[in-house]
Image (cartoon, rainbow, N blue to C red; front, side, top):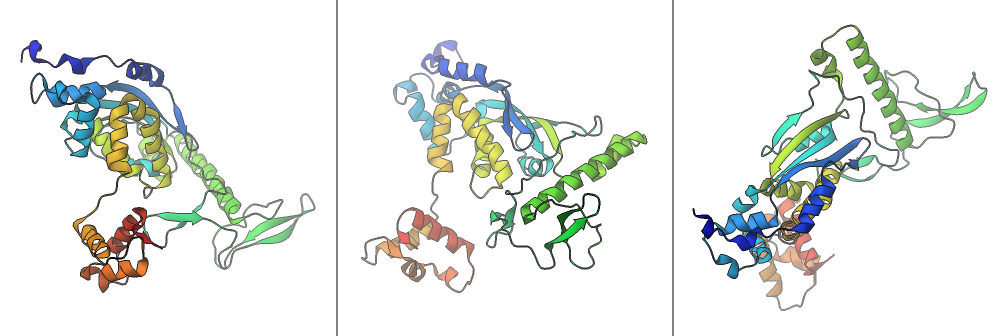
Length: 351
């Protein structure tokens, strides 16, 4: 194609983006206990996306749409190929349990720190006493709420005398048959969260000592690492095109994602992508992350509610009466719960 046909108006320099790249490259954004994210490199910009889209139509189409309008149209209608023209490369330091979720996104190029070649990173993700979350009752893979002050049956702080200091201290009584030793002494009565964080620290110290011991014996690193816990940190270069990066952010910035990976995703989105691709990121927020997708079944329920002649919002009882036939005989129905949440968010149904 002749260079004369290139829509040059889409190639206008974006000084704010160039400034963002210079400011962001190699800047570490700390996350969690020892984790971080930093931008290594970036290819492309909002203008590059518009340029890639217009090449399909030849010269002159920029008169029809400006860059912002075109990009918003592309994302709104799921025309994603122009977004694949841009790439972002990050350096990430992340706990292994979070990395297990992260690496499931198979659309990136990855080069990870090797514990066969190098000694494992001597840092672990820790949970503070007030950060232990409870298992969700409605989501088998999620959490909700925080650990309270109640001890499970058979567990309780018991007073005891420390013969070394002649002070009254506390020890945690455990259920009969617990194989562990008596544990540590606490100067004050601990909360369940303080106990769990204390035990976590003891476990981390023991695991690190065992790992170092194996290396001292000359055991190969690939064997010595076998008992390292998922809280151990790893580092990796992660390169991905913008289309697949936004897909990653859409899943991992969602409130249903695990909190730890959500912190990483939110940092990538708000601290990096937002400044490198401001128009695209705003369209992503408007049309994906903060949008509500209505299924055909959702639409049918809405029409039945609105067709009753009662102005919204209507009570939940009206929603249940208007629900789809396939949901009525199910005591628990996730699709019905999701539909109800959408209509409540739209102000059509009240609790």
